[in-house]
Image (tube, rainbow, N blue to C red; front, side):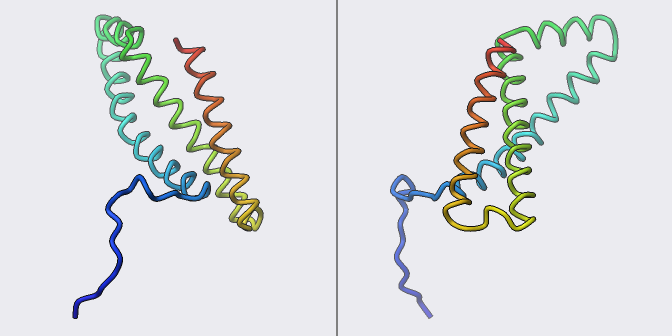
Length: 124
């Protein structure tokens, strides 16, 4: 049995609603935090191994790459917390309508962008 379904392989033509973007960002930041945790654990273990290890991690964290990783990790954490709070509020029965859900998603994404800029200014 062959199904004749329309196929759209051009993903640039698909426009997700705000709630969809917020949900996907929440999942992406969760995965990003998992991989960032590998860097954090490495830095923690290396810095506790010896004085030279601590100085090496300090140099890495003060480099451009280290600052980029710190900003990315804190940005992912910030959005994941904001998105998580949004989901908890929705689980309590609020912001479930289309208009309020879209508004809360846009506010969450906007707050995340503002926090990311602030994190970047503070870290850099």
